[in-house]
Length: 219
Image 1 (cartoon, rainbow, N blue to C red):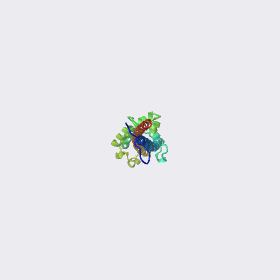
Image 2: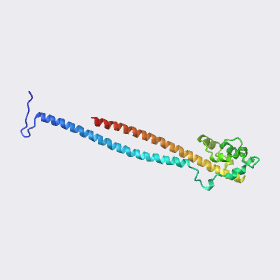
Image 3: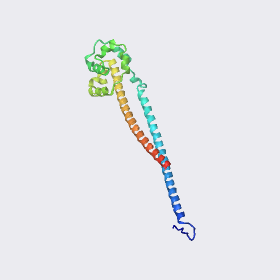
Image 4: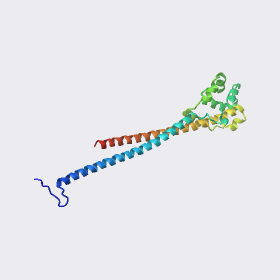
């Protein structure tokens, strides 16, 4: 038979002590759960701040993309499209020998067999040239094949024809802008990819933490 042992100064029984231990254990577990939930909430708050920062990065990248799409609209007068010079070329009967390389490059860039012939017979060709954009592959091919040819330098063409010289200046600016635009676009794509990876990782961490908090609440 179980005996109830009494203390001489507090009057607690063994059962009272066992009940106290049970209550203390439950209290400790409750505090532990509460601390875990508080810790989880703090982590979620931290993740939220990180997401806000990453959202700001994303917004900045979107602004960069918009600026990239409008590149060329605010060029200075030295980079303006030389309409008059292109129209003047229509009156040329043939390509001068000293400028054959220059016109061969123009034919290559604007995908035509004979640049002068196309310019004479196609009234919309000048507008097509103005809106033209090189693909990444063609830009790389151009840099490999023609970028260092002396016949394409402005100093060489300067004394051959004033119209060809104006087109040459525009061409160099055009290629520079295309190159910078492609480089910036690749950098933005790289940053977007990394941002997407960071967001995906953060979202997985949040999902795991939310499941952990649900488990604590259930228990």
